[in-house]
Length: 229
Ligand code: DC
Image 1: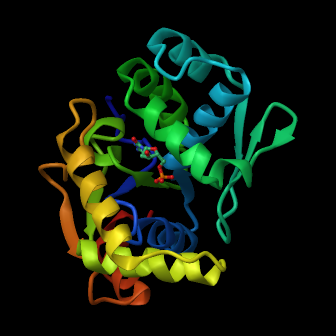
Image 2: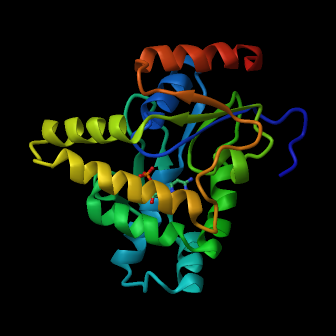
Image 3: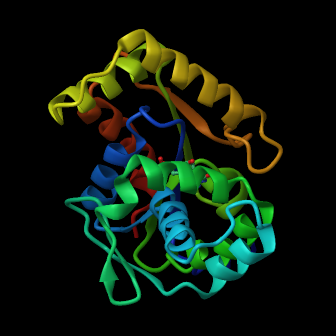
């Protein structure tokens, strides 16, 4: 991607789930008054559209066409998860289910789907600036971003956070099983051939294992200070 000198600045925040990147990206976008891209929600929306349309989740070309053609719209809401529409239907709740997560992970593994979603993601780069949250924001979607953050936390801490989240929803989960799932997914994400979860060579890494959300947000905002126009 080539950016003109006038292009709106971009901060990318990549990392595994449970690293806190969603919460932190939104807080940074809110503090700066910038736009926010939740790229995972886009993959989830394509997953939901594919399941609704009865698409074969292994048919790469059919999924890529769907990713290009589906009428997916985001409503920029900084205070909560973005509202997502598929045509006339609000699918904000549907994309957060376990089924949508599974479908998202299958469609996200298809290179043609990832290519089809590039332009949709880059369209979020508008003034005064963009905070982009995902797995490949700094490596592939916005390689020329002014600030790239890679957020990590130990697998044990991410399993604890997930356990707490689930129990707050009244869902019983077994901590060692959650930890095993997270470790398996980490390995899959880091070693997959298409857009693996790795830090960009010029990313700055923050380990949030023992840091509060506020502390991490403060670090990112300090790094972002020179970008404000
Ligand atoms: O962050 P999340 O759980 O909402 O992401 C949903 C799925 O999409 C997950 O399987 C990872 C994938 N994803 C991706 O491959 N690339 C991104 N930039 C964002 C999400």
